[in-house]
Length: 88
Image (spheres, rainbow, N blue to C red):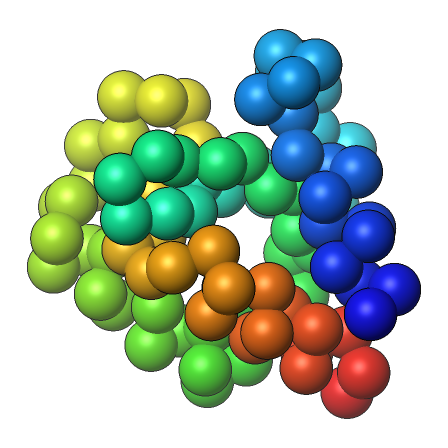
């Protein structure tokens, strides 16, 4: 449950912060309303996250007008995945 709180704190739609700490990446998640999360770059190496990246490429290509990577999945699925990755 702690990762859920951390991810919610990193949600910048309320703060409108554009800063991303070194070693992290901004991603936008959600099916209709996109929410911004800041994740560690190390997540990009995990096979489950790479599956999401492939889906993002298929759906959005390489053009991401929001300035971050758009991930085509539900917020709940993303939080579950990142919670798992944070424990490994």
